[in-house]
Amino acid sequence: MGKTERIFNFLIIFAVLVWLVSWYQLRELPDSSTIQPEVNTAPTQAKTERMPFTFNYRDTDYRVVPLADYKLQGLIVTHNNINAWYNYYHDKDSVNLKDICVIWGENIADNIYQKMKFKSGEWTCYFESWDSDTWRVFDPNKLSNNHLLAKDLSLQKKIRNLNIGDQVYLEGMLVSYGKAGLDEKYYRASSMSRTDSGNHSCETFFVEKLEVIKAGKPNWHIAKEVSKYLFLLIIILKILLFFVSHRKVLFSRKINYII
Image (cartoon, rainbow, N blue to C red; front, side):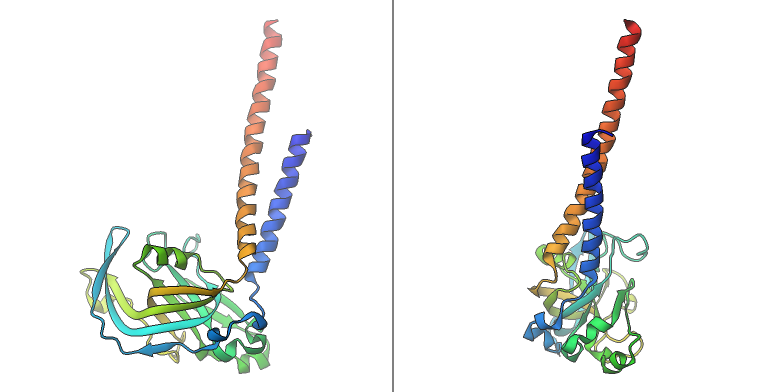
């Protein structure tokens, strides 16, 4: 094994280790001591005077029916991944950009949420705890799963970049929506209360303003991305090195044969 190959193997192991550590770190929610005061505030909902409108997303027109003006602030505890192989209902062309599961208020106090497990399905936020005291204190009415839409391109990018552990403020409207021309009875409609039964509140949220009050672990996100691309780069270089070395051997044999 040559020196170059040893260096490549070391870098592969290093990249994998950094990715694994980053993955673990990004699943850990921040300590309650880092939570900003405004994140403890409950969502606010008000009657809206807005009229239905249409907007285009990736060559498809969607009609949006405003139901209420809405403001939400909280801690993102999980979100879906529309690019996952198991995500049947979402893809890169889905107007529903991302679903974020958010908690606020007393659910953030005393690190209660760190004793909970949160997981996002394709449309649902699941939460559980094996600790009976935690389960008794945790308030499911101070959690909501938000299906986010936006017309503004910069907002769309911000929504896609939201991560677990981010403390966020969002402002816009609760809406029902569907493809233009579709009967409204088939529109995807928003929950209108944080105390809904079943899967609890499930908001369809048309976002007009988004602020990350405090990012979760931005450095670990960078480390994860860098390690992923480093791994891919080294693999490509190893493949190229293999073919170059193999070609040199064949060429050398050919010269010797001619001589």
